[in-house]
Length: 444
Ligand code: ASP
Image (tube, rainbow, N blue to C red; front, side):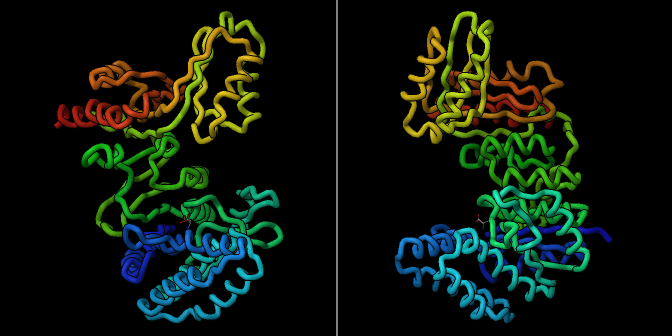
């Protein structure tokens, strides 16, 4: 018998109908012994996620505003689910406890965590699994840093006492027992942490898409799905905006070499995307996927004999650090170095930052390109092929796109180009057409 950890996202537990599908998936495979859940997400466009409603309640209390109506909406959703599933988890008592804590000024983390907690209680009853609270098992230090090894040991020990269990995702506890959440979307991380602690054979991440696609479907029509992907490629694609799972999900899974399989609760027959440590190069496939993000600023700093000046780059980074701005990329050439920063970090302070750069570094010139996009073309098969960069650049040139920056990481599985925001869609379409559409045609 194998062991699978199955994590279900917000859309898979959004209402009774979705929970029934989730139950069927779990019961179809006896290896699916540990189940990790997100809080109920949106049931339809325009609906609210339970987590958002919980945060809203807490904000209302914090600002002395009436919160009862929002709280009631949350209770009603759980009651409707409970009735639909035909189980009894004594929800009224649970709501009372949460309400008391809310009124007493409980933290946003605690309130938000109740979304996962309540749905896991209901699900455990519905499928007849033990309910195993992650409070006390998933551990953070007093500064909020996730305690990787401590969690792995404590959680592993506890899991061994339960043959089958449902665990709420997203949260754990500080050393004093108060609740601390992972970042938004963090139930994916809990799933990977549980998979590692349970020594699972596979970590299944069930969501509402059948895995990763080679490009964003809102830009490219019907992009090809990605059947398999390495952890490293996944990291590059997620970092650049391909958002199917939380990017930090990779680390626990990779530490224990557990494959991650992204699956679709609404189409369980689809095999989804398999993510492993292996870098598989498929015949006729040069790249694995394309992803990108908008709204960066590039500051290209020139100074004659820059390389002879000690600490030049350190001083640039120091200035940015003083403004609490992170550097996303730093392509350099002889006598030039460019820093790429997110517009959201600059937050209207570009002139001040430039002023400090001029005063401290006395450059010969600084060119600034605002409203830039970064587009990553990712694939472990790229490094062993000749002409990939040339093909990429000519595809963009043919599409009339002006490349403002090029950065090829030392991993050689990623070429990042900087283009103007207005050229973002056209660039992705051109790269897709050159590397995926045309390759598919020639290998067909
Ligand atoms: N419920 C949390 C959120 O909405 C965590 C998760 O769903 O992964 O961010």
